[in-house]
Image (cartoon, rainbow, N blue to C red; front, side, top):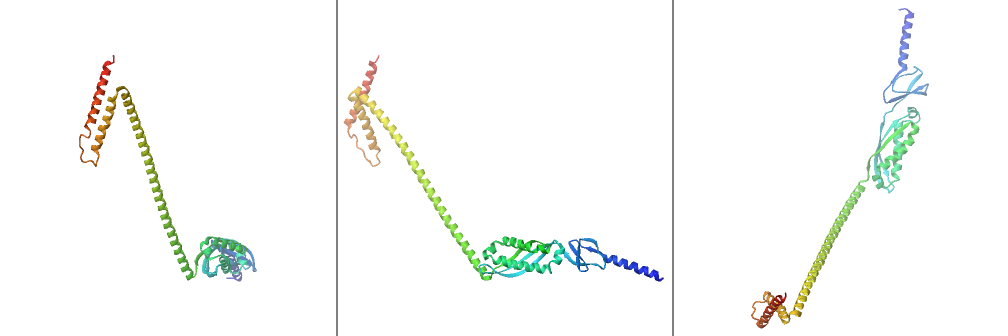
Amino acid sequence: MSGFGIFVLVLVILIIALVLLGVRTVPQGHAYTVERFGRYTKTLSPGLNFIVPLVDQIGAKLSTQETLLDIPSQKIITLDNAIVTCDAVAFFQVIDPRQAAYEVQNLPLAMVNLVVTNLRSVMGSMALDEILSKRNEINDKLLAIIDLATTPWGVKVTRIELKDIAPPEDMVHAMARQMKAEREKRAVILEAEGFREAAIKKAEGEKQAQILEAEGRREAAFRDGEARERLAEAEAKATAVVSDAISRGGTEAINYFLGIKYVEALAGIGMAPNNKVTFLPLDATGVLGALGGITELTRGQGHAGKDKP
């Protein structure tokens, strides 16, 4: 092979090598920065890209996926001087590869230290009870602070979550005793309220029973009064009839009335529970006189009926 042929072959190989040096493939979820003589020029997106060989070079290779950042455990002094141990996790995503590569050095370490310092600041301004009961508020406050602080770095913080908050062992025992006392207190209160409710229900039942009994007595008294009133009316009517008969019939009517009462009195004496023996006649003359009066009264009424036309 002549010298010209060798030159052409070397030239072709050199061109091929330069082309290969100028081709860059970027994986999905990543971004490469390009530097020309040490100065940033552009960012390569995922896929096939071309750069100037021997002039441009790849600077930083960054992931644009959401990245997990584990925050190491920290001991924090709360507002009420309690020492708690806390750890957390943060999720962030690179939005601007140029800022993430050139505005901060060692982005993960910088973010870890930023989260740790703000975690101590936020939790140190709260009491232990607030820390244990307001975890979501702490997460939201940390997220707002860290996201604002990392904006110049081209990073978007998506979430910050507290994983574990561990008070001291003696504090845990004290909290357990306090919780037990609170539960016992609630149990005693509920039991007392139950007894009170039962007593109220019982008193209301007794009251209702007394009201019903009083209404029953009132109704019975009303019925008795009504019966006595009707009996009195009947007696008055009977007395009026007898009086009329007396005014028209003379002594026979009186004897008739007395005979009826006499017979009723004898029946009452015979029916008395304490009366064992009754001697008759008690007053035979009175009985016979009453019967005679009845006979005369009947006979008189019969004659009066015949005299009528």
